[in-house]
Image (cartoon, rainbow, N blue to C red; front, top):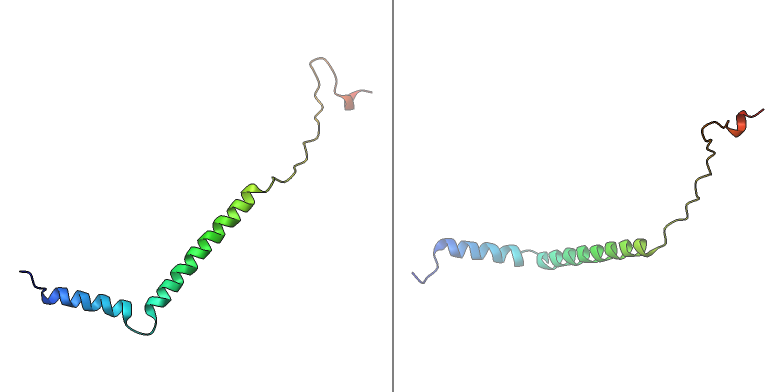
Length: 78
C-alpha cells in the first residue's frame, strides 16, 4: 500500500519529461512568463500616466438666445 503503482510512475515521468525534456523548455516558459509580467506592468504604468494627465481643454458652448413669452426674437425685429 505504501508503494507507487505503475500509473504514479507514468505520471511522474510525464511531468519530468515536460519540464526538463528538450532544449530549454522550462527556461523558455519562464522567459515568456517574465515578458507577460513586464507587459502587464507597462500597461498599468501607461494607464496611470493617462489618468494623472489633465483633461483636455474643451471650449464652452456658445451662448444661446432665448426669447420670453410676448417678445419677438432679436432676428425677427424689423
